[in-house]
Amino acid sequence: MLIHATVTITGASEEREACEADLRRVLADELRRSDVTEHHGKDALCYDLKVEGGIPFPLFAEASEEYPELEFAIDWVNVAAGERGTARFIAGRLAAQTTERIGAVSATSHPVYVAVAKDGTLTLGLTLERVGSNEWRGYGVTATRDTLLRVRHDPASNAVELHVTDGAPEWAAAWTGRFPGRRLVPERLKNPIAIEDRIYQELERVARDFAGAWIWFANAAEQEIAIERERYASYGYKTSDANVRSARLHTMRLNAGEGKPLEHSTFLAEDSWLKDLVLATWARNE
Image 1 (spheres, one colour):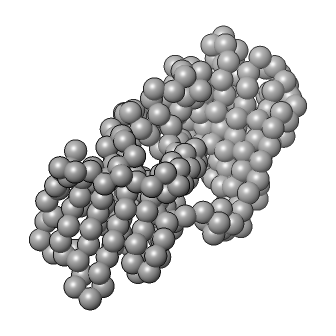
Image 2 (cartoon, rainbow, N blue to C red):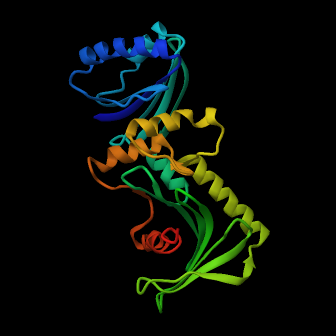
């Protein structure tokens, strides 16, 4: 059973340099049959592992004990078992650990779609909740902006209405017409449509939940995103105003395979046109 893991080691540069030398020897001896890739940055060591049978926690626990000033953070995913988790070692001790079912997370949350360009730029992050037989509301984010959304669909004529916000609790712009079909043109509403407070608060909660699970923002406190920046640098990716969390990005990279598009979707097949609509309109209209 193949497990994919990312190990990030942070701390003083002198300690990291010594640890790197020791780990190179140990990993070569202990994991010679595994796939180990190094992506080190200026402020962190980063190892991508593909290992059979289980994560070598004892190996990193021993290294952590030898270098107590360093922090070892491990993110792992076992696709076959439907599990993922994290672990953090400091001074040889397990400081924190989480495990969760991949399927359970998807089943209890709104469907999501995330697409990332080859250079790491977030093309679109989207989550939508069905609120009627032919109506959805949710949240969308690209590398440079975000919005709340409402989609209405008439199955008989294939006509759609997409409304988005622009910072205020009101629908400020719209795309209307048949989809798929000719390109839809945005319309800035002369009289924006106010969003009922109850609905707006629910949409804000959906946005916070999605961002908390998937997105890190460049304007966050530097100590909160330093590791994210390091991991992006190790991948050779650019950073933007909004970016996919590196643990999620790591899983997307592993699942996609070499040179494949980085996409993740839990939308049902019959609802996949919704992400196509947003990609063709709001996300395209940068």
